[in-house]
Picture 1 (tube, rainbow, N blue to C red):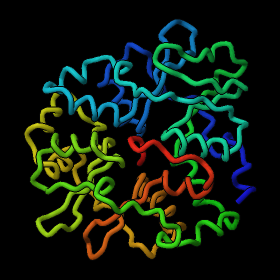
Picture 2: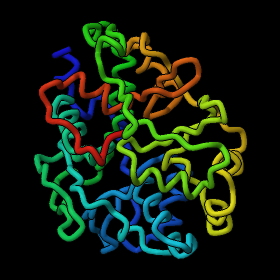
Picture 3: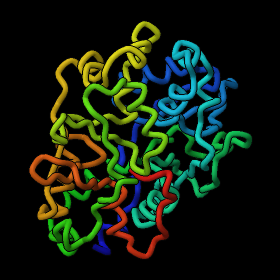
Length: 312
């Protein structure tokens, strides 16, 4: 496992320049970029000519929370995305930092993404004081490290992680199974009401169940990608399952496993299905959830716990 953790961040990330928007971009423009590239987060930078100053990252969860607080979805989509950025700092890594450093930051700070540059400057970003990457010797190679990049690298690892990956979920004891983690709504629940539950959830997903309590779907903030001013009203008028069908066409069944599944299976399912979480079910009823954060924490067991409001 040590060999894997000592790999550099650059060794597992794409070396293409990050797709970002300037600080005048609207929420609609962010959603459009997210849809085009299948992103869950988009960095926001200064619009000053020649500048590479990054103010932070707007996520699908930021947009979801804004939509639940406003009676007018159109106005949210037209508003400046920079105003929705979360209050937590966004950290910038050096591309030559180790995966151990990156994973510790991801699980400790409750982040899903980190900006990566080829400099030694690992300052934090916030909404008022952007990191001056324009002084860097390598600003043309700002890119993003996501939790999913690390999970994919774990899936491709041959034997170095067997000690962890061969554990069952039961043995690893990482399944969240309390009501604060496993929130569910009926198929008939209005989409906006299901979305509001994300603001109460420790894990940023809500299970959708039928009248027998069986899992039939899952709603997360990522399901907002592709939303437009002509469709945002669906949140207030459609049941959650119908909303998902209108948004995505064919709705894929939720990705599930049981308590006996190994972490190797979990990592493969997450990679193959491009999902950040698996629902753990018993006879079709969701009784737990395991997230990428949970899996990554197994690699750095001494790292502090993620803030409760940030997991998943």
